[in-house]
Image (cartoon, rainbow, N blue to C red; front, side, top):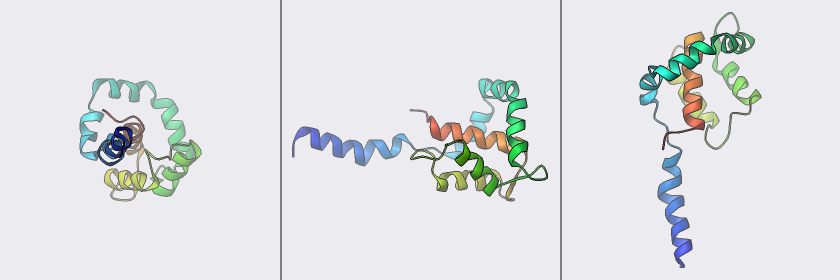
Length: 117
């Protein structure tokens, strides 16, 4: 095997799978970050409109949240349907998301789409 083949194997086996790793245990820290809180405050109105357009009776279920993610082309190799479901279940074990849960879910989506190195 050439050096370039070995390097490719190293990247595929040990680097790339972990480069996209996101832990939901970090979410409380992320949500308490001053910049994140400022952004959620600054964008509360447009985020609320998005939430209202997908929520039914002021509650957002997973199928509604999945539709929002699909409509906005958020699902890909970084944010899969499985990771979206896992995130929803972690934040909303009761099966329905209120607006503050929706904001937390969007932070998780952002974390998946742009993970920390």
